[in-house]
Image (cartoon, rainbow, N blue to C red; front, top):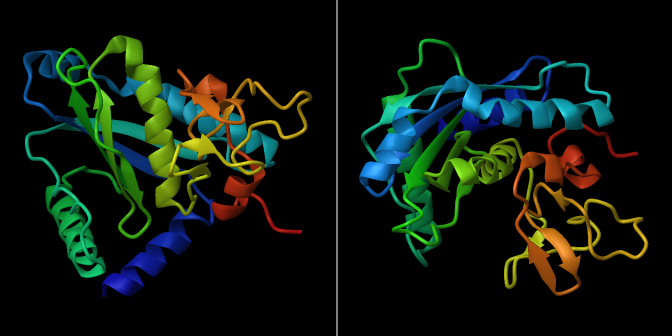
Length: 241
């Protein structure tokens, strides 16, 4: 049942015959007062730049949809998702994946049908300097994003949300996991640029702007990010010639 459900979900969300319905839930990741204040002020319009990013990039690939991604902020959740095992076996990771998908299914009370669920755990940047790695699962169409509860970092958070959202529809990472450096050429926004460095923008699945061959920086907003051809092929926006 899980296998068939995963196959049907993948087929449905990558044919792009209608907008991809994405719902976002907020979770107080550290239980802090500041994180709660930030969550209490969240509104649907706070995530409009994610929709605009997909709309802008889709035009480059002549996608027929005017609005390829429809993002809705649902509500705050008091329950946290199951944590992935650290250095676990393939079996333990499989069991965790099933637990996560079951957990997401149980808490789903959104009145309209959705394709992708994104759970954003917010942390007070004054107390937490770094957060755990975010993830997106194509099997289950679920994203878990660790973000900072800060207005100054809102747009940077949204770069991560868009990255994990793309994982749920089949996009793969385009950076070296050993040093987080964008892979050339697939992780570069402009491979024809001369000189090649510094790049002005980041490829969304590389997640970082290549400043030099061995140096990169985090994009601050989605206007500093593009969706490259390899990613477009993976999510079925571009056909292989």
